[in-house]
Image 1: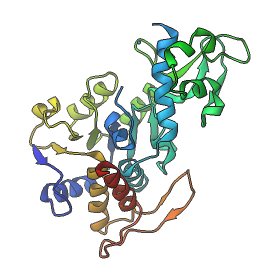
Image 2: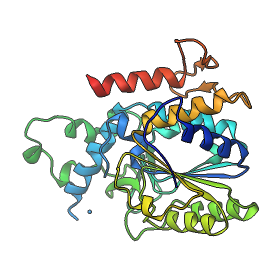
Image 3: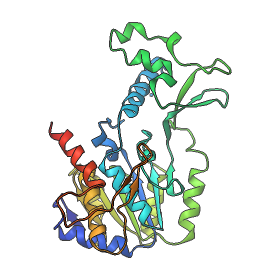
Length: 303
């Protein structure tokens, strides 16, 4: 097992991994909650009020959050690599706000912002609290316990039944077509490399996809801030573990690929502002794109 712990640009383990990444033709990327931790989102069942309070608060936080450096670095790498598939287990919608190609981004657990009816097919795409007035009541911190009851919960404008968060709960089917899409992609050619960030890989079917890829010869990179990650004990000499904050490690991986000069991965277009971020020049102190996101998140962490 190759072990790296946030050692920066000169880390020989990161450099060696970069060579393995560039040499890989098929990369499976499995995203867990840690990817969004630096954006201020907590990692995550039947009283409808309790359920809606739980998910409503997280939806409010998601709406107020922005993609961090790890999201943007992942988007850049996915844009660069032609054989990339990202399985997104998160429901916060942040990765979808980046330039990650939608054709290679597969959300399997739904989305907090896609609020849907419990009975009919009505769906509302929530982008601001005003799109779901219940959120406005929830955002009022004054005596929430007394002010929010069943009568305040959001209801379908078409049939009058309760609305619910558009996430996949335990025992429910994954997002429509998701398992078939992954199975089809994996059957097209062998996977060379699996990258798992902030996930224990204990939840199926994501865990099964990773196990299948490894059984067929794929190497595994684990990125996790948890120094005692159980996966570390299952890695072999062809695998990697990077211990630390994804908002630091992912940009380092991005820059490491950029420094090889093999391909240009540094142009990112964000959906939020539609601004082209210039190519990173690693020979100057003023790095842009991922660097700017990285610096912003680091400043927030130390404020």
